[in-house]
Image (cartoon, rainbow, N blue to C red; front, top):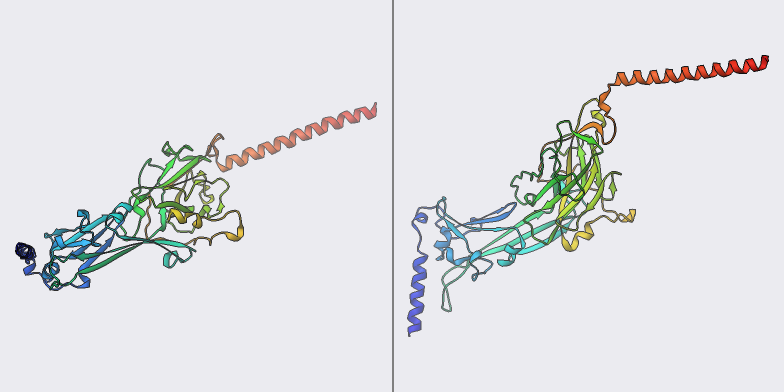
Length: 391
């Protein structure tokens, strides 16, 4: 008998908690739940979900009875009501990393498919699909219930390949500015330039530009990223434009094809990638004191277990991956200031000390001097030979 009374009292308490709040009485969302009540934002660092809270109350539930993936024993899997907006909503937010996905049991799936759209020229493009549901907890203790079940499903698809541009040689240790594009991991990456092979000393560029053949060490690394991913560079190239256009470009490396002065030290094996190249000038800048160009890298995140299958097999020309598109423009790009290279070579005299006319005059003088000396030697030998014949 006491048990029956306790159950009835509990039902009354829950029913009271689910009474419609004042903010919902005049709201257009004071109705039965609909599939369109949920909004999903696939952010660069977090997934943010919001559902109209008034339909939840209309169905005799409240915010304490709505949870991610039925994980009702975990406080972090419940939402937070926001009554300051119109209409009021129940918000859920979790970071895109392994810990949050495992705690609330979100589905985390890697999909590999042939590239389409902006990735149409890529042979393999991986995507991460993060999905789950927000479900209601029915507090009814009896055999039957008059509460409808509420179920909202959500998912975000993140491409793991995109274009990362870094042209920031003039400023040391700067992480790239990121735009919050839906469905992109780009905010977890930064590119930095170093002047030593241990990647410890940040590179700074003098106002006159870098010397020719100066060794530039480039590091692309991921932060705040689950350990199941590594960083893989598909292609890095330089352009004379600050944008990744290909009117004038020079490939540092594309798969197995690489510039003779470019060395890839680490790629696809950890959450950072390292390569180096020597400072150069574009021929179109031959009449300029400095040559300005911009560095771009086509970068992807690969699942640790599959990174090796995405790496090009450089031991056999028959097994190389399909070459990446020269005109691929990914949906998340970042840029920064220019790389400036002067005319002076490392350890060599400055080419800029002489103008072209002066160089031409010097060359002519040298040639005339050689001719005069040769003629003088010829005449001396000729006269000596003639005297010998006369004697």
